Image (cartoon, rainbow over the protein chains, first blue to last red):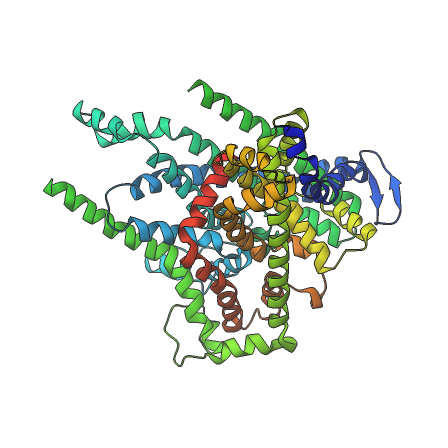
Length: 286
Length: 276
């Protein structure tokens, strides 16, 4: 049968039209408007001025630094913590199903709701977190008000919300491993720790690679959690590129905002795509 | 063996305690404080309310001319509309993209996959919507959500098509099906399991989306539940009871979804992540 005739290109047209008009074309246009000062009606071409400003102005370039810290740390914490949680939840404990559900559910909760709740839990004088630590004689810690700490408090919340997804991906990877490897290793006298290192870890590499990419890209794009917890403050201490895009838009600097958007594209293009290529190439070798 | 059993029991206890402290308490905190009187809630502690103030929920629903109800209506229309369009356009596209292995399809595939990572270009999208006359409209917002979920949804459909034998289509072709009825009568019904996954995952994502309505659907008559919650945060910063009542109202639909479709949600997310 004639494949071209049966699987007609017309089937692709609706999806591709929407995707191209609403996503790809604006993306391409953004490359142009990032070189201008514009207001949806008129524009003035200014060359690379927006980018220069983004890189030199301290209140703007902190966003690039914070985005990197945020993406790398959330990714690293999720990858490591979820690995151990997943191994714990694939062992013979009885409560594993309920624990899996409990740890996964925050992922379905609205980010704004999580942000509001954790901002309240981290309240400097009344918050539950400080009240608990106070009993142990620690604190009080100004989780979201201390410029040196605020970003890390948000990162912690992000990990709380997202570690469940990483965990279930690992669990799927671990469950796909042939049980006989473990039996053979146990007969040879390998300890649980050795089995974890020599069997589980290398064999769930594909799952781990997916998690790395997912968490890293998610971290680079993160906006709503930061926005609902700190609004980018105190000062600019927790501003990331995505929140600067929003702030500059609100302030009427559309060119600068668009440039921020393009900087996000560049960061993902330069970091996430090569990272994925690298991880996939490793996978094939292994 | 006896020792091992003891070890697993300890594991159970430690796991449950850890989950309770780390994951359950924040939810308990929301719920308890949503039932307190204003001054009591503002203390932000976990003490049981002196009297249960269910009236807080009523107050949230009636505040600002029942904006929460309007927001629910908008969010439901947005979610339903986007999910229906996604099913229609992505099932077709995923079907053809999987069956045909020529250059064009390879290129389109790569194009769509890039959309999994890259965020939208926000201001140029607004500019585009203004040109098309759909900025600040629910229709426009539906199209945006569709465009943003197309990569993930096509990927799910395309992955599922792998498991459907092409012989069925060959048989249908010989029996004289047109190419449209081949898809609508034979293939689409077989896609039911992945369609269910598509519905649930996209519904959760779109219902919970805050950032895109913030940019593309401003204005109080267009408010979605997430935007209303965000606005309440500024407005009710001294009435945590009402704020948390709203948080619970918005979380409840997701809890129901999760209780009914737990397995499907988890499996769909894993499939999406691993294939991407």
